[in-house]
Image 1 (spheres, rainbow, N blue to C red):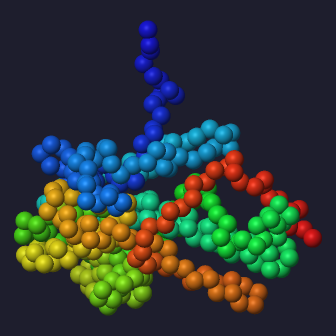
Image 2: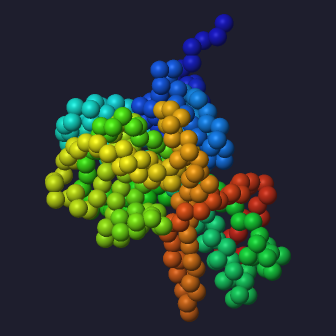
Image 3: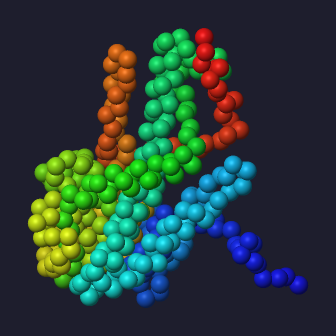
Length: 341
């Protein structure tokens, strides 16, 4: 006879959703499913339920000092926001916000910019670049540790892997920077009055310089910023500096022009990373047209006497294939004495 699991024996959380199930539920059809377009095969979208897409096993797990795995801390943190999402959508449908509901709207906005693979891959690629550059400098100075000297002539090409768990530690700083940027913006809720649904993605928070008409560079944080975040097939959050004059509470405005809805969907599809989502197949062509590129790391390393400068940002390009971190294949740990003459 099997006994019921106790609190200490609760089921292990394996599927960590980087796109909230609650968020995606707005896009489901009468069968409770939505169209999930994979960026590596956009011509054949999957017709699946929200629980069966937008996840990766143990994506937010952390190793404890004793070697055990914490699968729950980040999931609990995100779940605290996700459980409030239906309340936010009710306020959107009603056309009225109170400060408490606004808090959860902006919490979801921040979370969906910083928890997702587009953000974590960006940070992983940057960490790898910094590691490679640092060891190239040590090699030029003749201070490369003996354990790594066999790589001295191939530091431009040798595979550099990063323990992806390290990118969990960058999320708090990413959230702070994103919050600082959004404080310069005013917001409005755009409601589709054309019957043309908004789409969304696994990287649904898109922002850019509005003077960059072709959006050549994503995620520019200059003086001017334009931001879009689909809330449901009928509503999208729009942010811009010029909207600040309307006050802290988002205003509500209807869109009666199909070309405007199409333009927002085009932005959403361009920013999509691994996945785009829709309630039907009416945006197949649009999603497929932009599936090959996404916002990725754009970095220049400038060497100056006594220092290294990293000029970093984003560009639209093919998604990086990041090498998987395998501890068993890594060099032995480096210690202070390894860097001594």
